[in-house]
Image 1 (spheres, rainbow, N blue to C red):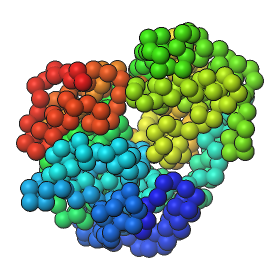
Image 2 (image 1 turned 30 degrees about the vertical axis):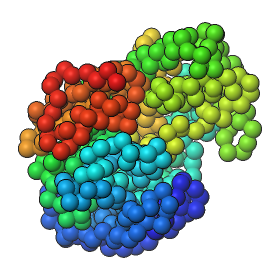
Image 3 (image 1 turned 90 degrees about the vertical axis):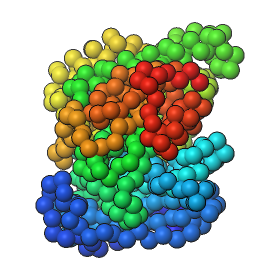
Image 4 (image 1 turned 180 degrees about the vertical axis):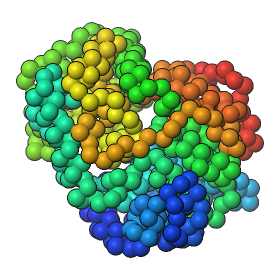
Length: 497
């Protein structure tokens, strides 16, 4: 198999793989749906071959079959895609480090980006002593993907309804989207939840022939690691959890906290613009320029100049902004340029995620399974909107968790949230990496996740970025020390670089 960038070629191939996979009986014994169902299934085989993709030269590409529904392992199967980069120093190899980017994000494409910036040249023991295995989760990327034809939010539908008609239009569209996804993807639509995904990683571990694996996860994958640890605590040697999320608080509290966090990040972005000539808005009031652009687009949506995207509203711009705040040295300059381009009539930068590895539908569908749905009426949603407007005057609360909540209104597939908060016993203490100011997660989320994994330590990093191993020499040193010796930094340590 050749892994290339997201194109229609591999998307079409993935659809064909889905149709084939759904016709193949899963390699598994009859099992119950409880937590040890996958333990009783025979080991699935990983089909390895040399990668033909030049970005993955000298690496191995592989696939493994796993059940779509672990409670009915003989009913249907799906394909997981993997890329393995062997440790540079095989004589001193210490194990296999699983890389996972989380819901909607292709770990394989994240590995590609890391290779493009020369990660082996600075990663140290991570690439020297560990095989790196990037696994695209079920429903995502090069694995059997969730593919739907309905748009997430067509023209005339808003995630911020102000009246009953707009609320009803939103819920009706969400139901239509879910039904379209089910028609095209079958039972997979109902089985891209955290628990099913965690069971896949146990199948990968056994397919690799490893007694224990090491884990490096970002964002959603921090919750996936916690879920896997709850199922198989003795199968993990180490866990590095970057930009942790907190799913212990009530859902509406988490949305409000994320909105506050993103708003703070936006304020820090505007302060940077005032101070730095690298900002395309330098010398102007960046916040006022942004607010004026949003208001203008809400009055008269800005054409994108093509057929792929509808004209953009101010709401669309606000919803696209959070992901531009994640890497201060990279995406902050791009956000300023995107604002200037949109002011001049070209808003297309707000139609793409700057990460480039996220599929919006593949983000949304798991979110409807993994999160409780506390909002059922327009009045409840309007109350939340008022709270968000108070804590987030520029972005208005248009953050990922809010979009997930409103995108799941009317969703016909029941939610299956993991019960969070209780300590996970028997798992190794984790190294939790958390920036002090990050648009996706508050610093406090690191402590909340660490508290569920006894003995874990939060290593803070002063700044605004996620994926901190790639950015911070201090974080790299601490991470490599932990991976090789399992020694954690002192609690309360903050990296300055």
